[in-house]
Each structure stands twice: as C-alpha cells, then as structure tokens.
Length: 348
Image 1 (cartoon, rainbow, N blue to C red):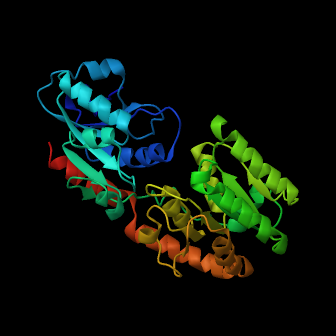
Image 2: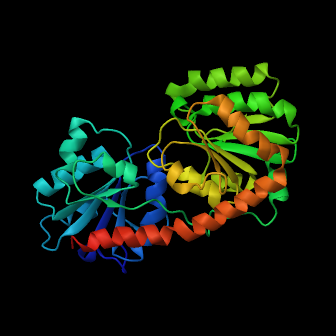
Image 3: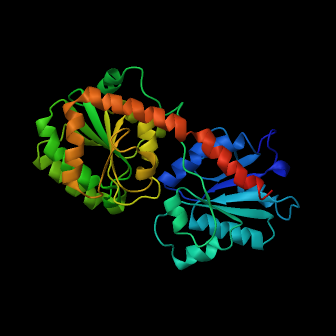
C-alpha cells in the first residue's frame, strides 16, 4: 500500500502490471518502476511488484475516484490500456500513457486504444514507425549495477555444475518465436567440436509449449548432449542474473521481438553476443565490435558466427568487455527513467 513518503493523496503515477505470468514486459516494467518512484510519487498496481516502489491495492485505488489532481496511468499492454480508459470514463482523473514495443502493424482494438492515450512512448524508431500518431522514442535501459560481470567468471561457471569451462546461453521462454530450436540445432552441431563448452536455455516452458520443448529434448538426446545442453525452466530473477554471469557467449535467437531486453542484460554482464536481426539488435549492437548480427532463423549463420568466438575465448571476453562499456554509456536505467519522466511532465 502507499507509504508515508507516498500517501494516496499525493500519488502522481500508477504503474499497472495486469499480467499474472512473468514476461519480458513485466521485467522491463519492474526495472524502471523503482527509478520512476525516485522521481515521482509512483505506485505499483498488480502482480510481481519489485522493491523500491509502494504497492497500490484495490481499496487504495478506490480512494482516488474523482480526485481533482490528475495522475498518470502508464500502460504497457492492451488490457492495461482498457483498464485505464474504463477507469477514466468512470471518474478517475487519469492521464493515459502507453509504451509500445511492437514491431508490426497493430490490431484494430490496439489502434482504437492508442487513439485514446494522452501520450505514446515507443521503445525504438522501428516501433514508432508502426504507430499512427506521434510518439516519443525511449529505448529500454538496464541496471548496470545489478547486471554486471562477475569478479571471477571461471568460478561463476564452476558453480553451474556444467561440464567444461565455458557456457553459451539463450534466455527467454522456450518457444519458436524466441528461436529456441535454432539455438539447440546450432549447439548440436558445435558442442561436439568444442568440448570445453556447455549450453543453457534459461526460461519457462509453458504447458502449451511442452510439445515444442519435448522435441528439443529429443534432439539433444539424439546428439548425446543431455549433460551439456540444459533447459533450466523458469527461475527466480536472482538466479537468472547469476546465469548471465556464467556465460562467455550469449546467443539472441529471436525470430521477432519487440525490443529484446536480454540483449542489453547479457551485454551488461560482459558476455560476447551473437544476435539475430530482431527487436532492437541492430540499434544496440555495433556489428563486429560489441556483437555479431545474423539473419533470424538461420542455423548455418548462427553456427558460422558462434564458432570463431568458441575457437578463441579470449576474443569472446574482449568482445564482452566492449559490450559492457557500450551498455553503460548508452542504455542505463537512469537515462530511460529520465526520458519517461520528461513525458510525464508534459501531462501533469
């Protein structure tokens, strides 16, 4: 509930998270919300509340009905836009903001909702190009104090219990859209040639994706790599952060993506990056310097890009160090929060 430092009467911003399953949208919301709470009297409404921001319960929300001073309702999903539009129609004094990460044409209902927003934020110029109204581009940031290289990457890897000396990772829900199958296919070809490497897929396997994950496990077993390609399932965020620190190389294999937060998370942790040209990859990565870009869904291209880094782990470490420098300089969480705050100030 609101605290003494942010009483209900003084709330400036409501950050709704009306999605019970943990997702990439939730992860981005959780990271930036505490930074917004340092700049405004901001509260979190919904599931997966992070530390550093007060929570708003339903009873507290009811007390804000017909308040005179307006407050921001910052939606990131259709259901949150719908809730904001309905609450405002019923008398809540809301200014509606929507962040769009989609890199595709929106459905009619999304377009209808977007027209009712007071301000629109896009997570990249590409996302902005699909909107039918002006928007402010605010690229995602990452907490570089949390996502950080380990003091000793070899010791961090050893904690994993995986065989070998180096890890390649691919994070996100296990499904075709994330290119999990592309990653597994590449690993089945490369790992037999590089016994010092193991691979890990970190992410949930939802019930509807269980058959897809089952096929991946069959491929892994057929290659005799059950001990060297691990699918972790869903993990606590602290465990995910630790897995980043165990990686020498990160493979971003999405076929399509809104932004791809794992790109900057892995870079912040100092992993070398091989990334499909999806989401914000082409905006985030300097090809050949802080990562290598490949076509989405192309196993041959992924193998060709990964192999030189596997052949030369010191070169991979050097690429990871350059990637970390780029993220610190260009994709900090404070920079993201400052740009969002500037949008808020145009409304209240």
